[in-house]
Each structure stands twice: as structure tokens, then as C-alpha cells.
Amino acid sequence: MGVIDMAIVKAFNGIRPRLDLGEKIAALPYDVYNTKEAMEIVKKNPYSFLRIDRAETTFDNPLEIDIHSTEVYKAAHDTLWEMINNGEFIEDANPCYYIYELIMNGRSQTGIVGCSSVDDYLNNIVKKHENTLKVKEQDRINHINICNAQTGPIFLAYSNNESINKIVNKIKEKVPVYDFISEDEITHRVWIVNDINDVLEIYEGFKNVACTYIADGHHRAASAVNVALKKRKENKLHTGKEEYNFFLSVLFPHNQLKIMDYNRVVKDLNGLTEEQFLDKMKEKFEIELCGKNQYKPLLKGNLGMYLGNNWYKLKIRENYIPNDPVESLDVAILQNEVLSPILAIDDPKTNKRIDFVGGIRGLSELERRVSEDMTVAFAMYPTDIKELFQVADAGLLMPPKSTWFEPKLRSGLFIHKI
Image (tube, rainbow, N blue to C red; front, side):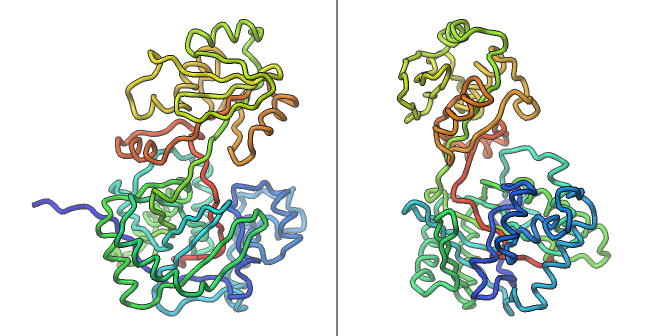
């Protein structure tokens, strides 16, 4: 009988903020901000984890420094370990799991913080749906390597599992160790799981989970794996038990997650008049004029379009819907039927005429962009978590910018020393 694959998610000796500093240290992920925005935050709040995640902010001239230089990563290392030595971070004496709940607009999602196996990533038990860019990967490889720690958790999803839910709900009956509302009005709560029986129960619970899926954090995951492979080569006494063989993750049951729309704005109509463009669109879509009323799609296969101060409802014609887990995604249909053939945007990753707007910004942001620097906007229906699972299960990749998860996990609440 063959070995049944299962996810390995282990407890670890977490490094976390001193109890009174959780709210001050916790920060949005490093790639949400540019240097200027990060500087403003660190100026207002010198405890912000951006001092470590965007260590250029600790220099006298952040805007003039090369953010990928060794001295910036070295500053991240020094700041992190100085804060640990000062007691601003504390390290748990025994391996723990942590329960991390985020509440946004009354909707709660609760994940387990643990360390996923690098081998699971390599053997596709941790499934991906996105390609990574080498330059972004290299940045985090340097950050992990020089800091000697993983500081940004990878956001993973798994198929809802009742035995894991049971233990999580039991622990959530206790008083959380951190409980605060961040500036963007998200509630963050953390519980520590350090009772040996509870720890074992969670570990065993994941043995019934066949695989996990990267929801957000493909670059951080790939970087952690690269560092592990490098350390394996260098370590003559490598056993597989070393901490570098595992990467920091927060794992959520799929039915608690919400993917938001990820919308598109395009600079010009590729030489067409509005009338010519609409004529071409009519071949593939049923079009309904909504005028000044914003149209947010409520069903898969529907799109909103903002053009010439008017909103339109677009419905893809049946014969243009492919029977394929990737090609049938709304973002893929828009790319293959509109952006590429009509607007000449063949590679949305590199083309400067297209931009992407996260659904959290709302439809008014699309109107603003069209009034300022763009010509047409497309409001998408969000990709479903099950669609993400189907694509990853088929070993396929989603088009760029297919998913926007909210709320975003905070960095700095959990650190994994490697």
C-alpha cells in the first residue's frame, strides 16, 4: 500500500511582541507600501515592524538608498535582534501553535499559526497557483538569510476540517493574549497553544488534511524554500529536523475565507473610438447601459465596465466560456477575449498600459482612475476559493492578479527563528 500524503504543520518556539507591544509592532506586509509610505508609518510609530520589514526606513536618507543592498538587510537583522535582546520581543520556551483570529466588517476568520514543511512544498502537498518573480524572491531570500528568521507568515488555506475546528473553538474560549483593533478597523486576536495535549491534537488533526494551498505569499514561500535548500547543502550534518526545513504559516479553513475582486484599468482603447470598441465588445458580450449607476457584478460571467462616464453591465456570451479550470475564470476570459485581442495587452504582467486595483478600494476608485489617467475600467466578479483549489489541484497557474484576500495578515506578531 502506498504512503498517503498528508500535511505536516508543526509547533515552534515563536518569537512574538511583548504583551503591551502587540498592537504597536504589528504591521501590514512589506509589499503593501512603498518606501515613502513606510517612512511615514515608522516616523509616527517607531515600534512598527516596518523597521525590520522595510529596514531602509532606519537610515538617514531612505529614499536615496538601494533597498536591496546588503546594508539594508543587515539593518533589518540588527534591529530585530536588538528588539529581542531588549525584551521588546519574547521567545516562547516550548514549541507552541498560535490561534490568530481576524475580524473585518463583522466577518471572522481564524487560522492556526505553525510551521509548514519545505518538503511538502517541494512535493506539492503545499499547492501553488501563481508564478513568482525572481527579483522579489531574491529580496526575501536575503531578508530571511541575513535576519536568520522568517518574519512574514505565508497565508495558507485547507479544506475545512471538523476535528481541527473543535480544538480551535475550545482554545478560543480562553482570554486572548493579544486583542486589538488596527488602524484599518480590523480586530486581531491571538491565543497561545502550549498545552502538550492540545499541541498533539492539532498536529494529528493536520494528518487528516491531504494538502494545503497558498492563498497569499507565493514569494515568501519560495524564498523560505530557497534558503532551506541552500542551508541543506551547507550543513554536513543535515537531518531534516532543523528549523530551516519549515516555514512560518497561518492556515485557515477554506469556508472562512473571502476573496475580493481584483479590478483592471486600461490607459487607452488601442486607437479605437468608444463606438468601435463597444461594437467589438458586442460580439462577445451582451451589453446593458447602466449610466451613472455603478455596476458591481453579482454573478460569475458578468463584468462591470466604466467608459466615457457611463457604467455598463457585460455578460459573456455562452459560446465564449471555455471548459477549463483556468480559461473559464472571469479574469482569463477578460484577458483572452478583450485585453489581448482588442486592446493589444498580451502580457498584463509587463504591459505599462494596464493597472490593477484591489477590490478593497471600491468602484469609486475605478471612476477616479478613469477620470485621471485611464480610459476604461473593468469591475470583476471575485474568483472563488474553490476555483483557486481546482486550478492548484490541476497543477495549473492563475492569470496574474486573480485574487485579492482581505483582511491582510499582520507581520511582526509571529517570528520563526531558523
